[in-house]
Length: 294
Image (cartoon, rainbow, N blue to C red; front, side, top):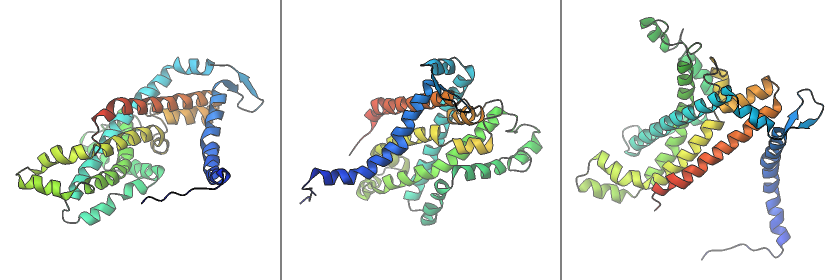
């Protein structure tokens, strides 16, 4: 029988909720409210109060070609990095779930990348993909100048995508492996006895049963690609070359802390938040229909 805890006084329940409410207000509602206020005012870089300007900050941002370039490359980055991290995590989890030789070791090793901080992984990939001394130096010996992230925007974006995807493959792997292990073995064994191959069993049985996990990871990976990419961009490219990796989250930092345009940066943060909310609503509205909950 399910047991429920009841309080004789409503004030006791409120006291238990107060610490959590304080945390939410302090670290979410208060900063969000300040960002909204700053986005509607002109914040002086050296102090001196705020000047109310309404929606002028938003109009100035939306009229900037540099900002729309940042939005475009952010969406491209999110789409490619999410696809790579989820596909990689799914493949590795499917292979590990088959309990091949050494699968217990793989299970531990494949989780490690997510435990590494984004700046640390960016520093590692910066050396690994360096054109003069890294793995790509061999390619440059064959075709001189074909790989140079310092000059080529596409190469720089490829570096950022590789570092971010490598980190989140481990995150996706954890959830996909848990989803595979939650599938009753009787279903897999019965399908194997009927003569279904590995790929057929995966597509007809395992894939439909893990669609809730796929949907969850899709939402999380897309959200994190817009938010957690700052450390990687800052260490690897600093938004360059020629703003080719100046993602939205990094442009907020560069405009606010380097350009001292606090009001413009606040307006950009509001737009980024609204974009993430709209993408999440779109996913729940249209993609969740294809999810099979059991």
